[in-house]
Length: 103
Image (cartoon, rainbow, N blue to C red; front, side, top):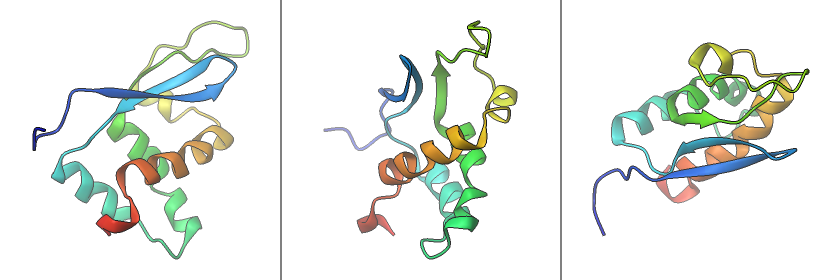
């Protein structure tokens, strides 16, 4: 097993046959960027890390707008996701990249 970051990705289902594709693993510098924002005792503070975290790890999606048109993946589009979607992703991403044993 390699000791380096993998190019593999993982799709996280958002329901309605939609997903966001994220890096399966992250490098140390990316990990440290996330840790700067994390506060295991303060969920409200962790909400501040949601968009930067998604920007750091997301690489694609198949999301659609209200009219059913595909929305191209971009850093700008991430900032336009609704709060429910952003906060719904946060626990899954924290569990993926920041397991208890690493902190």
